[in-house]
Image (cartoon, rainbow, N blue to C red):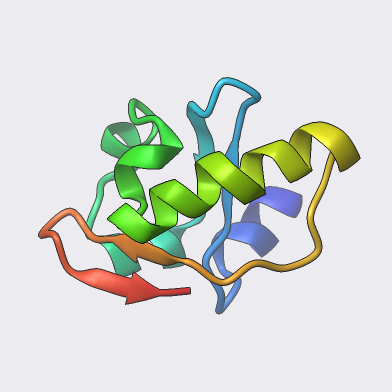
Length: 88
């Protein structure tokens, strides 16, 4: 099953809707960030970006998604539930 593969992947996976609401995250990312699934699914993606990550999201990443519909790869710092900056 795709859910099992995604959940057991060695890298974190995050999916969010057009409005920025987090809709899916795998166990690897949840462990990395220290969130429970239900907690993370209530957040806007900007809440887990560092300050620089939020700026990048607003000025580059989100507009690129709107124009092209996808991105291949990005590097950004996420913030754990404890406030730690985590480069991904």
